[in-house]
Every structure is written in C-alpha cells, then in structure tokens.
Length: 87
Image (cartoon, rainbow, N blue to C red):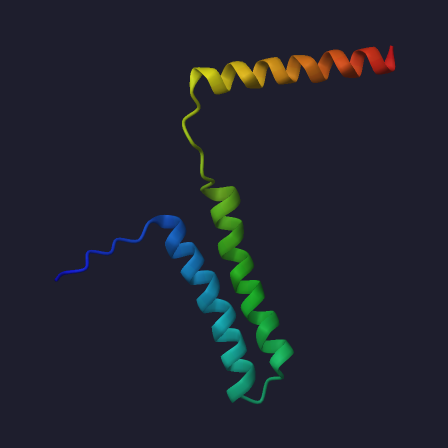
C-alpha cells in the first residue's frame, strides 16, 4: 500500500510554524538560553511565516455571483444604516 501525501502551501506554513516554535523550545532547553528566550525566538520566526501566509499570499477563494450580490446588498444596508444614524 502506497500512501500518497502531497502537502499544500498552507500545510507547509503550519508545519513551519510548529517547527519554529518547537525549535525555539528545544534551543531553550538544551542550550544556555533560557526557555523563555528560546520560545521568543521561535515565536518571532513563526510570526514571519504567519505574516507571509496572511499578507503576502492570502487565501482567496473565487467568489460566486451570489456571494458578490450578498456583499453588495450587505454594504448597501450598512451604508443606509450609517446614514440614517448620523443624519
């Protein structure tokens, strides 16, 4: 039985976040660094991966016509509500 596993982009990002936090904890445990410093370093590296996943290459589903229509109606409703509140 052959197990075919292919990781997507966001699977790799999650693995990189876990690896950086684990690496920071490991570095804080087996070196002269304090555990807190190691975790902080791992969190800084994990933050870079989160930033890249959210802002450089965000997940963007292809919106359907219905989703576009709902968004337009919702924003029109909010606009009317704001205008009625402040005018």
